[in-house]
Image 1 (cartoon, helix red, strand yellow):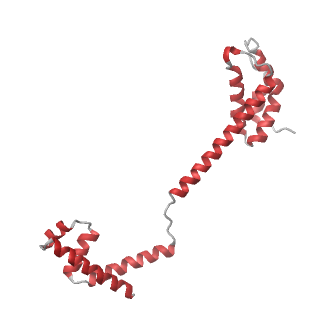
Image 2: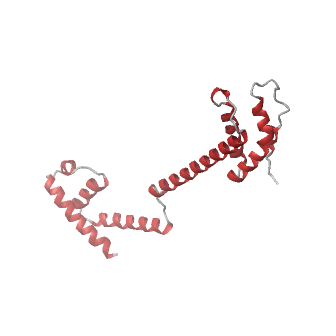
Image 3: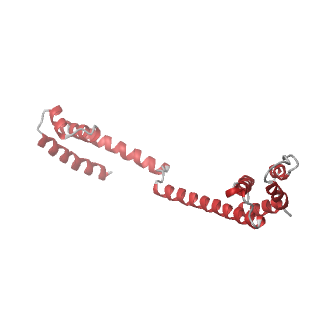
Length: 184
């Protein structure tokens, strides 16, 4: 038993078509082979929209053959064209899905699990507390260099120290921060 979507019934109804068409053999082919062609496409594709698209494309290719020539075996041409076009459509869809999966794997979104988020928040708070416990001259260097992302030259100018001193202070501050955070 063939399944015919409602929209295809009107396509197969040729009583509304002008009888003076120069390629009447195409209309005859639609009448003779359309129902079976739709049934085959439905089994291959499985959805109405794709079936309608391939059905239309098949008959358009038939209508636009070079020199409006009629193929020797119209039925074979219709079924071969329809099946090849349907298979091509399925292959393109498979490639599309494959490329989408590859992109998803390549660019995985960052997921935040609640426990990881809370751990990050806890670590940030511990770091803030540790920076606050540093002597002012060390804490100022860390804040300007690491949090404000200023170059050493600018940090040194703001604090009124040499660039070398800013580097040494930062190094000392990082050692103290590491010890302070690892203790907890």
